[in-house]
Length: 108
Image 1 (cartoon, rainbow, N blue to C red):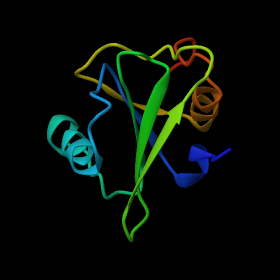
Image 2 (cartoon, rainbow, N blue to C red):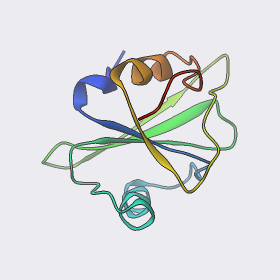
Image 3 (spheres, rainbow, N blue to C red):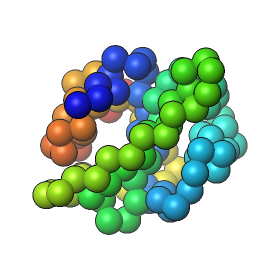
Image 4 (cartoon, rainbow, N blue to C red):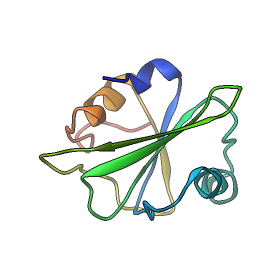
């Protein structure tokens, strides 16, 4: 399993994101909607309405990575406030990667 928590700070983009979006449009959301730097080396996580998959956008100083994970069983408990981005702890990122809820944990 890829450990997103090892890449650095991780942010969850709350609400629904069109999962057809690609690197440039996801980076645009990070920059324009939340005033964060997509080139910062942070991981940005996006989820669609089905809540059984998510995308992770990550800049490694040479280029962007776009990771996509789909769960065979279960759904994510994804925060719904579309005007919000939250930083996640390493523990929360690991729970998310294993399809556990993060809603019970405090987001910073």
